[in-house]
Length: 311
Image (cartoon, rainbow, N blue to C red; front, side, top):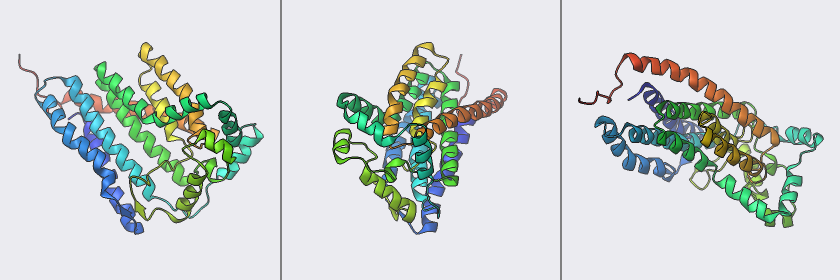
């Protein structure tokens, strides 16, 4: 394994341990079904990845599969861990953010009302919001298709750092978005059908006050307001593929379509998007520096499982 893969594997193991330890300390329970996706991925992909890696059949496929498995495990473990953290014992600061943005002319209620007047556009944005994880996977597949091992590894480390920074900021400054504090007109809500609707806002307030006693796959929805990790999922791919001119503008276009959807359907404050973009840039900068150090280590010693190809 490359140094990056070993490092990320340790992060996944540590996070998985925390997934069980934190709920145990708080007296919460976890439905084992939440781990079915990564377990399925491991059963299906790990043997194939090991075959391609150790047999040197196709290094490009091996790198893509290893990164995909680690990404899948990390995403699931991070989601469970985040849902195990509340309550924090202090109120979210969203009312302050809502008031500040109102002074600047932005309103989630107003934007949702405008979206209700343009139902076709709303449906496009709604689909874009639902597909944000797919943007990450598309970036991963693009880097794999280019046989860009360095890009894949930077992508993986950046994702883990983005998740870490987002969680740390959220714990320090709890936010859940305007849907927990504002109510849409019933007619507007019926047309827009925001995923973070008024009912979900009520649930967010309950979670922040009481926590989640039983974490299930159904319970696992977006909790973090600032910084927006949905923004990370469309901005980080742009950064990771920026040196590919053809892919660059495709991902920029996707981000421009997705940004309004994050505000409306994700129930985010505008500042959440700015925070998500900042986290993306910071995470990639940290990941790039870490990668250089790890890659230099691999240059002096043959990574495990990468025996030279026979002549």
